[in-house]
Length: 480
Ligand code: SAH
Ligand code: SF4
Ligand code: F3S
Image 1 (cartoon, rainbow, N blue to C red):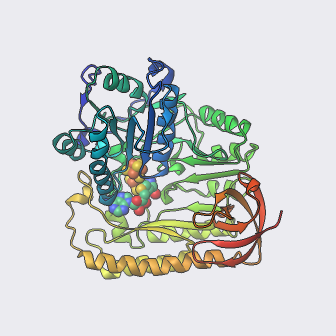
Image 2: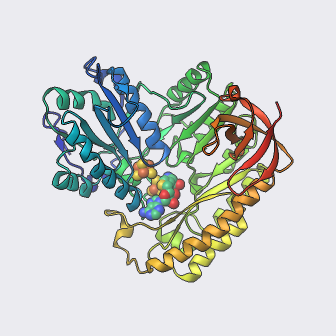
Image 3: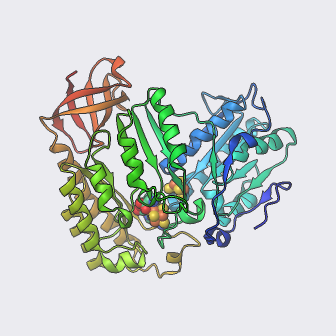
């Protein structure tokens, strides 16, 4: 598709988004796009973020760009001059929440006609979403997708100065944009993108269409970002990608892969290295061996399985079998004793029978998961599974989800229980959601730990003795 930068009316095309030409990935420099200054002077913004960590990281970039344009963050929606919804398309309920919010925001637009309302992220990458905004949400001023965040300064110039509406969504394989400013939400824990996009095309999933082809950031850029974070006093980084285990497979000029990145990070003075998400099919034993070195490589792995039945896995295009997954889990446990594993599971995939669902339950029992995100299958327009006969009644799907959750919750409890009486290291995030005299943070195994202690521990890694395991968190005493 040709890009016409002069019209600002480019709609998405799922057909174009599906193409993979395997051209070299262009690397762009954000500084070339920072073509106006001070446009946000005396103006405030707010961003509402939906979806995965990738979107959270994008919102930090959007905030960075807005602050570089001299916008300041508004305390409430009422005073905001710019409201951006950074959206997620992965399931229908994520989309419904955004449309509900757009309906609610209409009153703010009525009260303040100068308010700029924008929608970005994964939803605009879908044709039906842009068509719906055009038909029903006339008061939305700005729509852009995941491939053109770096053009935000230009869009704002058009919307603010020429008072024109901007809709520009590219359905392309995507580029890598370096030097985007970032306003990080947390001073101690940082997201680090190591790759963008996805080439897996699991048949239920919209992500390869909304995010473009899989493209890896150069190790030099990643390691430089980590060095900068270390200099700024960060304790923890989480490497982000839809399938981090295939990092580097797109490099044509080097053999550097995910295991090499982990090995390099292992030697860096950053206390905690995490990553998400892993695809089982690309998790090799060499990577497990590097993780087994421990140190700053945290003993926690999120390893989505989706289903425990071979026929369902095949129809999902997951490219591994139940047996291969079980062997991988056994190998991870063998090489990294005490590791905590969590997963993602979809129930009610089109055609899933009772027996096939039972295979998922038995796999969950075998794997010792200490947590899982569980979902009812949601049909996504444009994906292959949308053509499948979705014959499982919703009541059956809900009953399956409930049975699965009972099992998963027992895993959460068991995973917490094993730490009773032990001391763990906790990176203190802040006060507990429900009680501000209680501190809360995460252990190395990614367990939520609550304990009483002085507020000046926030931002530090401290030792806590675990006194009691609840289903969702651990109780402990500050130890030093
Ligand atoms: N790239 C990651 C997952 C990204 S989406 C991975 O492959 O592990 C996060 C989770 O949402 C998926 O693991 C899957 O369990 C769920 N999901 C994705 N598409 C879905 C759909 N159409 N319906 C229900 N759940 C879905
Ligand atoms: Fe979606 Fe599969 Fe890619 Fe994960 S690996 S983002 S589930 S297509
Ligand atoms: Fe959602 Fe897009 Fe992430 S669809 S899960 S925000 S990649």
